[in-house]
Length: 68
Image (cartoon, rainbow, N blue to C red; front, side, top):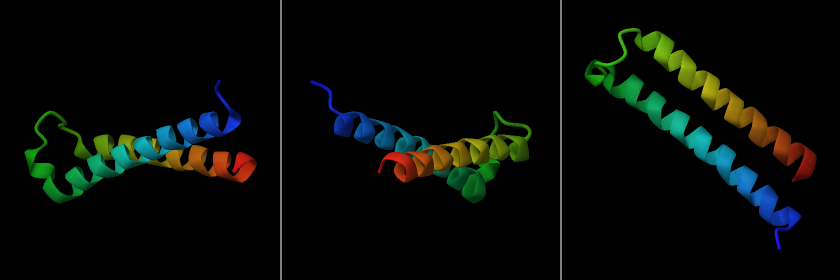
């Protein structure tokens, strides 16, 4: 049986994983952008990762504030 706690934890883990993925990608861009050959517009690619990071953080905050 799936409980509210299980669903909450699953959502929290999903948003934390999305946040971690975006942070990891940004660290690569900040620390080694020379090796990123497939993105001719590095700033645009980084902006996309910032969007993903902000969205994940917003969702995580909303989840914790409303249901945590």
